[in-house]
Amino acid sequence: MIIDLLENIARTILDSTTIAIVFGALIAGYFGFNSYRNQKIWENIEERYFKKGIEALISYLQFLRVVIEDNFSKSLLVISYFRDLDSSSFLEWLSNSEIVKNKKSLSSKMPNSFLIVSTKLSNEHFNEVCMNIFAEIGKINDYFISDLIIGLTKVAKEPGSAKMSKNEIIEKLRLEGKKRYDHLNKELGLYDLILNLEKILFELRKMNINSYKKLDEAFKSSEVSIILKKLETIKTKEEALHKT
Image (cartoon, rainbow, N blue to C red; front, side):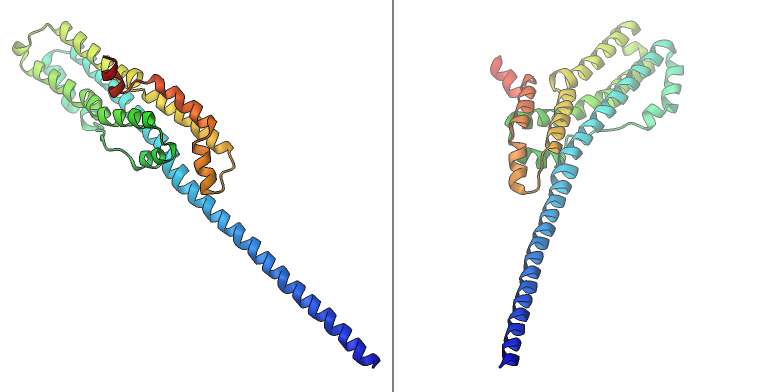
């Protein structure tokens, strides 16, 4: 009888231990799966909305800025050579110049990074500012790498066709180039857009975004909204037409 009692006690202890082990394993598995799932969600958010989204958009806008600045400075160099050389020497220099050989064109195509960021920010003014830049950047850049050079080449080859003096041509081209460069930054707001996107990225990086819900909340947070509000100083074409 005592033996039977001991066997029952042992069986009860064994059953309790087994249940505890199984239950513990289930709990560990549950939390382990959740941890893995949360990690994958974060990795997907990081890859799509940060690396391929806002960070890629900032990098693209910085690329546009660098190309424009580079080509603007090169256009001024071309003007200076046109000013200092006679026509034949200028044409010879231009034909051998790396400026002509390494021209960088810019596309007006909207990058995929803009579409990703746009869907999250849901801000029409931000969209308009970006689209205005993408629409006009190619034309502005073409002036520096193509239009100006073609004009000076024609004058150098056919000086008699020019309706202005050499100094007048130089001054007109210099002012026109500066006007287009200033238009991109002061009116279209390329610099301000880059600066404010970097501020938004900084704010987003401070937040604990570990779910898609928190991602949406972060992009619509008061911190981000305040920064977007600053972009309203950049007047879009539609606003300019309405004002007139």
